[in-house]
Length: 544
Image 1 (tube, rainbow, N blue to C red):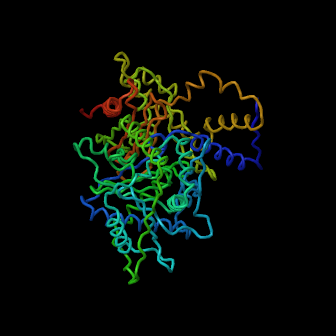
Image 2 (image 1 turned 120 degrees about the vertical axis):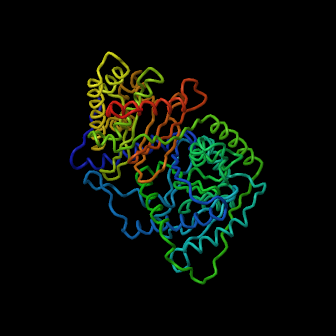
Image 3 (image 1 turned 30 degrees about the horizontal axis):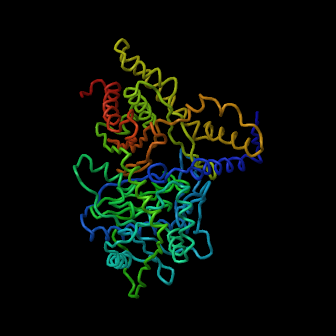
């Protein structure tokens, strides 16, 4: 048995060490492709334009907004965030910029270029699979104005008509080991190395996409989210991504837009803060007049592609299309009520939705499954995330009682409140650093590090079942009508993300088509019905 000694003097170092272990184990050692399996996407409400002209105007505004956000970080003007009157760690914010994940044979690593003596001053713009290095600061160090950025984007557009260029970005969608080998081959050429380094060092990526194929209004929200998540396939916009990049803003010609981020460096709450700043900034007129100075041409990034690299690209294209076709995405807006309803009954909105998800899953599959929600650990310095294990004994009692006609409404309501309150208590424990999964990981990795036998719990079948997350969930802490989207953690599982607003809730549900047991639309319809019935449970006078 290993006893983890956390004394007063070493507690902070131990917490930091667990965070490093967690990032290494959960992200950098994973060999799964980044699109779908790892990188979350956030799709935002459609902008009011429908052609390339509006696309470039909005993209210019977006770039200016992100640069303004970065300036607030650099000058210490970004307000410290709080949770329940406790200040939160803000260390992740500067790392969002000029950072990139680098593939390796056994594990990846993160390159942070923003800390260097000469901090990068450019972004990377991608259009029609072609990459451009665009400086966004003037020679005197001032940020470019929106009109200056717009003029440069027009130049990029004129240089990036459809050609027979190979979609280099597709390589980053591969299995990490495969991409690592291709990466090493690619960088043997000096020109390729310069182009790749320019992308890796850029502040962030701007992906100028063609329009999303619109079949019906009902499915447009799902297609829009999928477009941000993976680009829609190799015949669509997937070649406009560099999936290793920490921040990628996607702006479509049809008004669709969103953000894709790599979560070894970034995570939901800081990204939500960034998006909130962008939306606030976009409501204001351009405050600055463009200086009358000539602008250097944006630098097109070229690649030398030999036959071996061309084969790597073709292989990556096939694999990505298989992955995309396997993913079922269902996005819907539940409009009967939002987070105000649970609040009126002194219930946590997040806990309310979690119990509803458990009930909906049980109704579809006739079982309770291993499920995880995400709790922020930013109350601690350097803290990232911890799992909240959603199923509880109280939830199981409620689930078994809810569809039993012999049990009274009052008894069901009491069991429901107990289930919600139990989940709220679990959440509080995880937020305070009392979750179990980080500690178990520390126990296992410390044993390996010290050459000791791995504790028997990790070899137990029950532990394997308990960590086969069939239901991966997450709440977007956003003040806007955005929807987050990511893929399931296991082949026979779901990923459910939700964004509760005052009077409605946005949901995204994903599942893999290769699994006959899971179906995103079935779970979505069941969840919709379940939420309506829970409203009836709380407010029996409300008619269906």
